[in-house]
Amino acid sequence: MIKRIAQTAGFAGLFAAIVLTLLQSLWVTPLILHAETFESSAPAEQAEHSHEHAAGTPAHEHDAEAWAPADGWQRTLSTGGANLVVAVGFALLLAALFSLRGPTRAWQGLLWGLAGFATFALAPSLGLPPELPGTAAADLAQRQVWWVGTAASTAAGLALIAFGRSWVLRLVGLALLVIPHVVGAPQPEVHSSLAPEALEHEFIAASLITNALFWGALGWAAAWLYQRSASQDLA
Image (cartoon, one colour):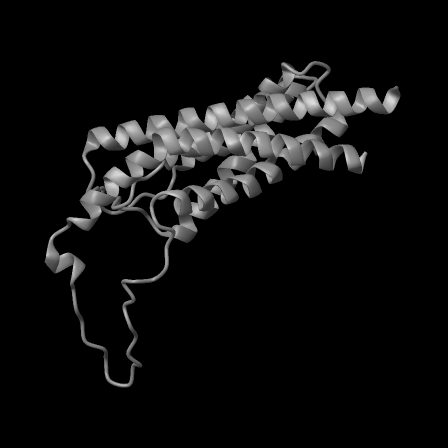
């Protein structure tokens, strides 16, 4: 069983990571690079803002030359590596769930993938949409808490709706889907962005569509590989 889960996660994660990296390279990354041009062309007084340190406070350097992957193969390779780690982690989660109540057909993995997309991308984006560089945002810790709570609530809600054996459980599941959005995501005091509004909207759409295709590929591949491994074990 552990071997089946590990093999499923490894190969499905690799396949989905390749799909995601290609989609990001063709669509998402160019939008980020475009937004970075607006960030780099911000008024000089903002980019070169200087300040004095209070007495007794040790001075620190503002290192504008901190290392970052260069545009091109370095950026693509770094993105691909991060995608692989994330994809294998999500594939492990799917394969473990398959061992409890797995799909009987590979196409059913698409439904699991869509559930993962709803949990980890769609639902959180309703309150915290994907952001381009130069976009104002609320406190990071608050956003992380809301994101984790929304993902957990969405996962539990979908599970109760899909597998609940009574209408009461399904109603509880529906309530769990709604609660995070009633509470509301933390927002910045002033909404502002250096990038044009049209670019923001395109980036949000590109990010969500790319994530949906990633989750679909991951769910289908994981289900197909899991069923194939199970068939070989029975042979």
